Image 1 (cartoon, one colour):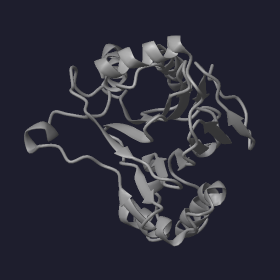
Image 2: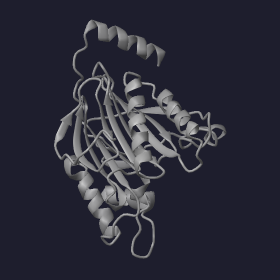
Image 3: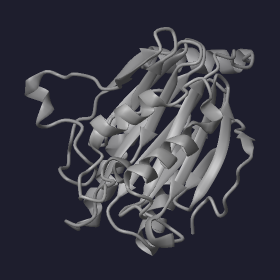
Image 4: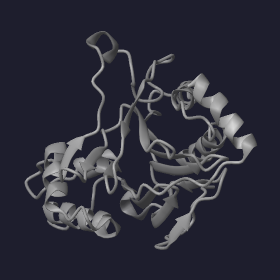
Length: 283
């Protein structure tokens, strides 16, 4: 069982407390207050349930939207079962801006499997609509790319930690338990883009066996029209396919593009205001 069952090219507006996603092939638009997003996932070899898992959630007050992409080792029913468990964890933490607890819960879950061949990388991004901040937590995953509309430039969205923390922090899920996970925040401006992807994209090979790598991906995104986000993912994959000489990818490929439209969140009731104040004080 997975939560997404068919390709859907339409725009889906998330409701409060909704969790959307899974590990099925998908091409869909998603909207939450302040963000338009496009999700495209293509399992390798026409597998109906790949190793890439994607989820989007919306909190009860319409203030916190979370976008998660995970790359799990393996395919098939075992990964589909993990996708269902991950959805449960996403719902449990749907109202929490601090996503490090969610990542630690995921790490404990993988550790309980007791299998050396079952691990995952993941990146979680939570958009806080009242302040336009995007909070990022990365568990051994390729870092997202950030397009800054004001300057028209792309950069890697990563947080530099002190050397004493690098070796023991933000490891892939299921490698070491316990592991510390850290998060950082950036403030998005109007029409900024954030590109989240799995390593199947940067591990694409040309006809000579050379990997695209992060540098090649950056070269491609800089050549694309960032002012047309609704066509960006398709254009990106077309360019990567050209790099591969149109050969099929060797791994699952998932891309999630966030476009910051800076729309105001819906007004809160007094009860929601009190709850949100309590959560922000704890954060």
